Each structure stands twice: as C-alpha cells, then as structure tokens.
Image 1 (cartoon, rainbow, N blue to C red):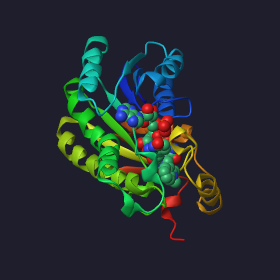
Image 2: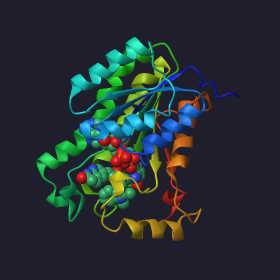
Image 3: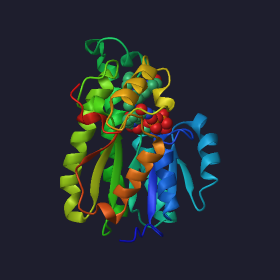
Image 4: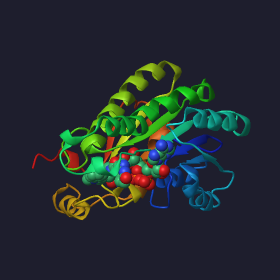
Length: 257
Ligand code: NAD
Ligand code: IMJ
C-alpha cells in the first residue's frame, strides 16, 4: 500500500526545539509529503520554531497556548483559510510545575494538579473539538504522546503520571466519539528521550542506563523512531487502529523485572 500523505495536511503542537519529539514526528510526516502547521508556546519559543520550520516548505507557524482557548480558535481560523481542511494532528504538549516533579506524590498541590491536567490531558480534547470541523469527511488521524508513568509508578513523575492516565483514557473516549466519522485517535507511549522536558529530571541518566541494560532491545529509543511510528499512525497503513496506545520503548513495557 502506498502511504499517500502527499497533499495531506497536519497540525503539530509541541515543538520547542530540534530535540522535541513533535519535531521528529513533523519530519517523518513531511518526508512523506504532508504540508504542516506548527504551533509554539510563548514568544521565547517563536524564533526557534520559525528557524526549524524554515526548512519545511509551505509550512505555517502560529502561536498557541492550550490553556488559552482563543489561541486554539485562532489556529483553526488560519488553518481553514490556508489549508482548507486538516488530516492529522500531532499533540506533543505536556507541562507540570517543576516542584511537582520531585519528592512524594501526595504533596501535589491542588493548583499543580489542575495545571498538569489542563495542559497535559485536557488540551487533547480542547484541540480535538476545535479542529473537528476541519477534519470532517476525511479519514483523519490524531496522535498524542504518552509515557509509561501513566500506568506504572515512575518515581518523581508524580502528577504527570496521573495526567498521562487521563490522557490515555481520553484517547479511548475520543476514539469512540470520532470513529463513526472515520477519524482515528491513538497515543504513542515513548521510552525516555533527552529533550527539554527531560532536562533537569532527577535520575534521568540512571533511567536511560537501566533501559539500555534491561529492555528487550537492550537500548534506548530515539525521537526519530517515535516520528516513524507517528507517520504510520497518520497514514492509511494504520487504518484499522484507533483508541490504542502503541509502545515505542524498545519493548521495556513487557518486563516484569
Ligand atoms: P518538549 O519540551 O520538547 O515538548 C513539550 C512541549 O509542550 C513544548 O514544545 C512546550 O512548548 C509545550 N507546551 C507546554 N505547555 C504548553 C501550553 N500551555 N500550550 C502549548 N504548548 C505547551 O519535550 P518532549 O519530550 O518532546 O515532549 C513531548 C511529549 O512527549 C510530551 O507529551 C511528553 O510528555 C511526551 N513524552 C516525552 C518523553 C521523554 O522522555 N522526553 C517520553 C514519553 C513521552
Ligand atoms: C519527567 C519528570 C520525572 C521523571 C521523568 C520525566 N521521566 C521521564 C520524564 C522518567 C522520561 C519526561 N517525560 C516523560 C515527561 O512527560 C516530561 C514532562 C514534563 C517535564 C517538565 C520539566 C520542566 C518543567 N515542567 C515539566 N513538565 C512536564 O518545569
């Protein structure tokens, strides 16, 4: 089967820099001919994202803070004008306050809990409901990024783990809602990758070493490998798959010890 991503359009949320997993997803999609729009969070990120997008012919770069619904509305308005329709969304957005990502989970503040869930879980639904009119009548694909800390305890991941559990459950409910319209919704649960969101995480190097020693493939995964899986989920090759969490983690999730 041909991939047929030429002429299709995609919206990529969550590029901060060249190490972002969303950037690897974008590169895989653009390699197969997709036309892309990128969003960035905050003025400090604009320059970097514009520089990256400069190498993606025909791409758009737009501001979007998922906690500000009017900024999502604006993205949809511009996409309607510029692309007319939308085939794919890659959601690579997550945030929790740094102080919530260390120590005991039970110290989580109400505010910290709310922020982590709004940005990292609810945003998938907030974006999905707004892009729906653009995806209507085409075989669309929505892909988000998760982590095993949403299913199992990963020390320090704390409230982000609870938010990822909500994100993965959202994938299943959205898949059920949108399946009748031919729109698929899936998550990729990626192994640990050194990105901005992994910087300063206590013990991250030890976790990478552990996975290199214990995972079935005896190595860590790269953002490119996640990008290729994203391309598969965006393409018709995955037309029978929705509501799933696909692991790109060198097989680590199968281990009991
Ligand atoms: P990253 O820091 O490059 O990406 C996170 C993105 O979220 C950034 O672009 C940031 O600007 C964006 N963001 C934060 N708050 C936002 C807001 N309010 N509105 C809009 N955007 C906002 O790091 P990454 O590792 O590429 O993370 C991408 C996704 O992958 C996240 O969902 C993360 O949980 C997930 N993930 C990462 C790893 C890892 O080890 N790096 C593993 C599994 C899953
Ligand atoms: C993050 C925290 C604790 C342990 C962690 C991580 N492990 C991994 C991550 C083991 C792999 C990275 N990850 C999967 C994330 O989803 C990260 C989300 C994140 C990271 C930060 C760091 C900086 C900050 N807020 C953040 N919010 C979310 O201020």
